[in-house]
Image 1 (cartoon, helix red, strand yellow):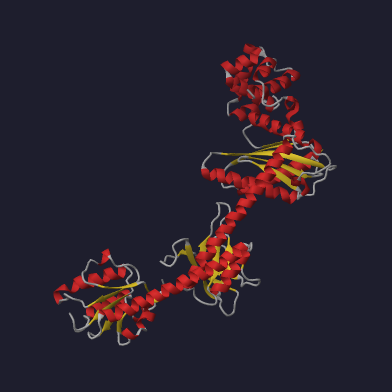
Image 2 (spheres, one colour):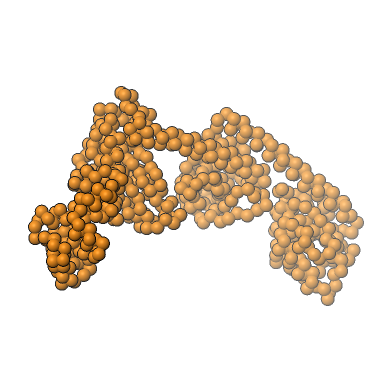
Length: 536
């Protein structure tokens, strides 16, 4: 995999070889050696090839043809060209030397008394021995990681083992721009002061994962400016990570990259295992919570595990609320943002109420907290949380919250059902943000959910139902008039119509539908009836 041209030139068979161009580029890797007989090199030359040739067929009139051939070899990432002299040419033409120097392609000459076989066999043996060493190194490193995994090693143990093998600090960072280590192989790691942009690192040495490289400046008087190699780890959209190797002690070799590949394999396996265990525990907790909310988990003096972990108590009062998150559209990006919002809501709640249990769904979350706040204080804190979330959201969100009364755990299942019912009723009435408690719904909190449409229709005046069917714009007019406390100007502004139009509509409601708009009690009843109408 990684034998350099410099090592190849150290072989006895090439002791008398002369480098006549590209001397600065003899660090290139060598993967194979072949004799060039024809010019169809694009069919068989691969990166890392050494080309043996006598420049057979070279003539002055074919000079451009050979220059283009050498350019093609360089494009194919050929590592070097070795020319055997005195077979076709007694010396390499100056034009080819100039071209190779310009491209950084090493050009080497050998005497005609050296056979191709004398070079090919030792080079192939060198490559074979190197590959064999790498294979043995792979087996040794893989065995170490198998033993570590069998002993129940953590991710920290896995990266510490990699540190020992490659003699360089190993860390995990959350993203390609971050300079903060989430996990480190060393107790005392040098603080990164700044980092350049991460560039994709392409090589034949590593194909299984995405590699990146960046320059960093760290707080280390011996090695302040070094390179970091980053490898993408498995993870979901909200939980990404990169293995980060700092080349402080030495530059990474082929053996090191083999160790990195193996380490990443086992780290990803550990990530998968941890994620599976976490999801299994979450499913178990959710199932228990669902049973509790459904009233199927009797509290016979024994606290369920979900409450015991949070140190909840039977005789204390707790407050709960349902929160619904509505996106402007259902794109995949917005659905992810919805999930992030629910997680953010939970985390922000912990700032005010450290003892918290919750159950989340795709677009909804139920939260139960230990709180002595009055309903006014509780609403104020929720308002602060909602404002923060909406300000930092990447998409437009509507957040609707229904708060339950404070009760002991024994009565929370009934409270939660009422709380959810109130949320569903208010969501039917309003398509904007709201934070409500039971008292805010007034008489509507007495309605069962799901709503029985027939029962509601029987409660509504016939003239209101007829108006709703024939002239629904008059229903909106009446609703705005009631909401704005019978103020005609404000009601008109709310509907974006002229006050004269508002007066005309109100007169029509009075005359055509015989609705008394001068009676305060009648106005109040109409407000309730319109809400009931919206529930249909």
